[in-house]
Image (cartoon, rainbow, N blue to C red; front, side, top):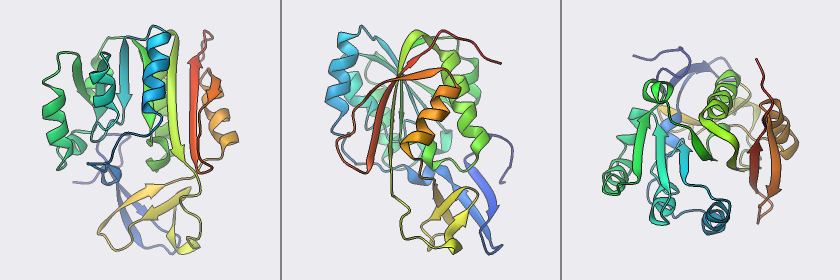
Length: 230
């Protein structure tokens, strides 16, 4: 059964610009088999130099970034919808990762909310832009802020100009639905660099450095601030 409750399940009922009903399945953006992003080695070296030990990979998908950090000796907790972990390819990666004693996983939202651990760093890679509800993007940052230790790091990645050329008929909420031929669609919302930094600043994450290597990539390292908010 589809639900509209915040983050209860990864399925969303919406209407597109023309008023036609569309179902968004956010787990459909999971792409098993893809190699880690080329910045992964750089981030592994950087986190090692900064003394990071425990990492939470939020929206870990098929674990393509979780596993390299595990192999480098970090403790990594992968967070995902149960439905995403069950997808073909993702379930195989999950079984492989569980062979490493430094790996753990949490189902979003129920297990993640109950977990009491604090982490030295978070990975938020290709996640926010696939989420169709603005309030849920903010919820993610609020929860990650609480889960991170003081002065912890958050590594964010997204791609820009992914919806260029799409017409108004593909509009859905504040972004666009993708894969129009499918019964269930994925979602994408381009964020400019300015929008991204403003969002993170609102949740007391300050930008430490930019690591983008291509014009369509956005890769930023943020640091958790000490200020509190309501």
